[in-house]
Length: 66
Length: 223
Image (cartoon, rainbow over the protein chains, first blue to last red):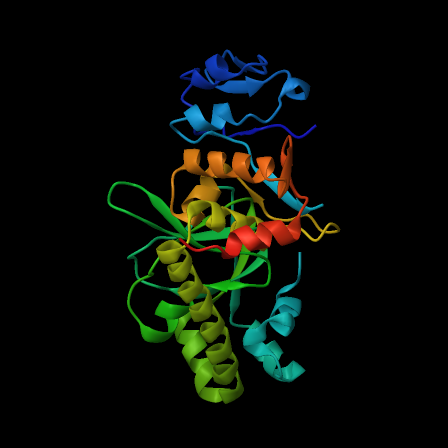
């Protein structure tokens, strides 16, 4: 399952991505960084990427010819 | 990942050279590895070397005073970056950053000059490579000057689409915004409009080009 990518070094644990995630895919771990727990529920809305000030979370698209 | 010698053989820089000449150049090549997001070269620092991407993807970009990023080129395996300052002196005109884990092969500026002096065929090859790069930059100026954002996004999708066998470069909406010279939100709206028009279909993390002709038509529209 392809999921958004999280750069643990960049994540400042602000939790904004957790708030905007409709599908509750993200949690804040004990070490203060965000992790994906329900990757299968992620619909790639990219809101987590949009709100991340430190650019720690990214949702890259693969572009293919149909 | 291609070996150093394989990369030299396949590079347009060194086409037409004998095995002995390639081996000679190979001895001047150094290797460097970078993690995702790591900066490879920084704008306005002294240019040290010419780089060939062996594996991974590198973005070449400029940053404005207020932190806005404009991507000038995405460099894929077997392509080069940082030619200009290596040949005409001065500082790096742009920064380069690893988009994924990257291995690059480099040739130092002084070594490159020595190759040019002894192998005129390489100089001719390099003129062709730089002319191609110039065409790309002229095309970028044209797009930024005359085309609507949706046309620029359509062109990015066409340029970076995988051929259905090999997967294409993976780009975030932020990457596309930096390439199109616009805000991330505008890219999001453009993708939505292109999907509504039936030119593309967004299937979770995949953007599928469903109507290539329609997308090309949108890409070619001017103001």
